[in-house]
Length: 281
Image: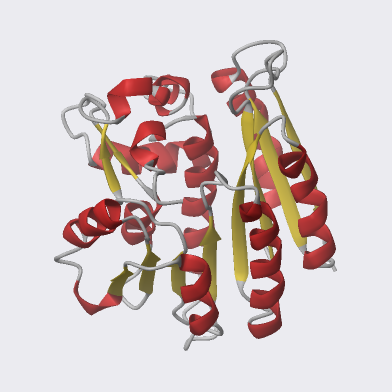
């Protein structure tokens, strides 16, 4: 939806889960010699100020990255992600936060390619500007990522990581995510897909993981972080989840060890918990 700006939510608990996983996925895929593509269907602006502009309105980073920033006991996957955030804040003060495009860019090798889609005109311009010196390895398209993804699969290298994380401001987004995954798997069944979704009180959010399981078949992983109990009026996001198709085989064990720490660090009340489930061939 064209009104959505991720800058309002930059660095929140949902970003922590999504971005920690993104870094781990990119680094795992980089262990093989053959290059791969990273495709981000809803890339946003790429970089965000936390001490100015939209991010100061809600200060949601205080529920996420700010809670991890001073910690010295981070598990390795979280430490690797936070270290990348520290690259943007060399003086030790948390003022800037990287979106998924920047984190992917800092994690890929010289032979990889990054394809970014962002429909919002202001954010797509910022994204273009943030990657103006990246060269031909990064292509930014000011268009709908769902439509753009269809034309890119399968990737030329036959290896790819596809991040799908729309705003879910429209009810149709939930069904569209399911359909996009179905269509994408028919074109590129061996790609690694990472789909983010918000935990909300609305039925569409609750039903989405099971719908994705039916599309994915037998090689998927689902992880969700709930940071608080839902409010009595059902308003607001109380957590988020990531659904992965064709995930690295090492990911389940890593998350089993890391998610309890995240619940402890980011949990806001007794409703804090995590879900971790998977199915393999």
